[in-house]
Image (tube, rainbow, N blue to C red; front, side, top):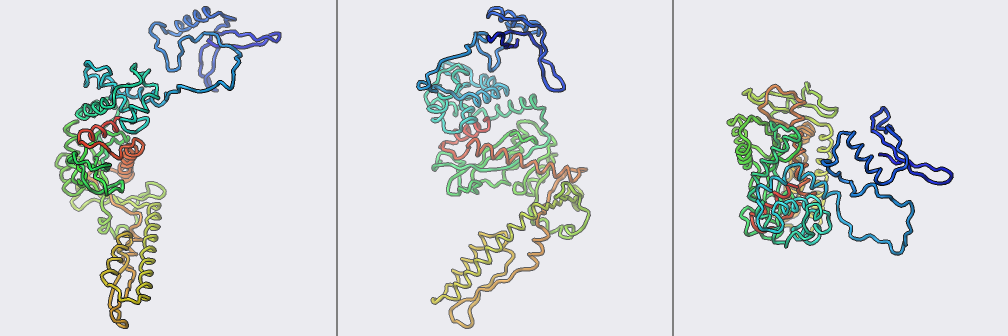
Amino acid sequence: MKKLHRKKNGKGHTYWALVESLRTAKGPRHRVVAYLGELGSQERGGWVSLANRLDGKCLSVVEPTLFDVQEPWDPVPSEATVEIAGVGVTGTKDFGEVWLGLQWWRTLGLDALFQRLFPPGREEVPWDLLACILALGRFCDPSSELHIEDTWYPRTSLPEMLGVGAEPGYVQRLYRTLDMLGPQKAAVEKHRKERWGELFSLDYDRLLYDVTSTYFEGEAKKNPQAKHGHSRDKRSDCRQVCIGLVVTKEGLPLGYEVFDGNRNDVATVEDIVDALEAKYGRAGRIWVLDRGRVNEDNLAYLRERGGHYLVGTPRSGLKRYERELTESGWGSVYEDLEVKLCPSPQGSETFGRCRSADRAKKEKGMQERFSKRIEDGLTKRYRRRSKAKQRPNRSLVERQIGRLLQRNSRAAGKYDIHVTDDPHRKGHVVLEWTCRDDWSDWAALSEGAYLLRTNLNGKTPEDLWHRYIQLADAEAAFRTIKSELVLRPIYHPTAERVQAHILVAFLA
């Protein structure tokens, strides 16, 4: 039904037409099937019913769409008198984001999953709806459970969408929902994998693995996993836990494990492989890992299980290929990226040497910046010592130089620094340094170069490169969950609540 307006003798008239939608070369257009003239409200309703039948729809089973109204054919006045001083906006509700989140929750089948996991009892608000509220709160407005209860939930349209009151229950019920969610991690991951396979036709032959950490505010004494360790958040003063995340090649998080805060990244690989195989079975998957996540024992472990790997290798491994770096035979993947493959002496592995022009410029700029800092620091200390009236402390000078090199470690190997006694001033020291030409030559040769290692056979340089750079998808997933979904910091004191907090973030 389409409304048509026409003026005749200075008076406006409204006519109706029955139209159908057509696709044309200029885009979708309406074609008039019949002009119906002026219609009353009952006549319009009858024509709508007829139009639906002609279109193959039965009004008794047609579900309302998002923007349907209850009485679409009520007449709308053409004019209205408004008192501006009395106009105000009250009772607004957040709608769009919670509607989108709820649609995804239902599309992924999480509503049905939690109804099975949490059978209804005598509670006024079902546990599955509280789980939905927790996940949507993390998705839309990440904050504490108290914020969800007191601030976020009442200002949204969720009470009307879920059919519960504006107060889902006292805040302790949200915390108790966390206690019930934690043990369901395996069931959630299994369901998510199956549902994603149906929606997106995913395959799981290539998995990306990375590790991050998230810290606690508070002492977290009740959590045995909360320990001091290498902090990616630059909060070494806080206890933390480490999270190992496995994502598909499309960047969707497939599973995760929580480790002690002082766990070395290398020591997590076997645990994560065992956990994934226990859930989804053993298969000849390809594991893509960064260079800080593996060692020889990990690679041997993957080979024994029939698995494949593509991993980054520490820069120190480039030394053995110094001659090849100067030779020709590089294959161009992109305009500024070259890759060369070389089989291992045993023939069971392949090493890929990559060289990026953009990365070389970046590393050169970093080296020059750190070199300038070191030289400025050494010059400043040399002048200070030459003008000193008091006898300098030699051990103090050496410690200051050590701290200077530590802060600028990328260029520390460039200098030979010596602190000796001053032959002309008794009790004073002389600070001397020289630049190592061999170090500078190797830095210029290796800038922008790095080494890949794999036991995959028959792969082209382009294929290996594309597989490896997909690790950026795992890093993007971490950025999303830690920053946008505010996984950090964690305030929960117990290990069970922490596990549930992380699970809610991954659901979001």
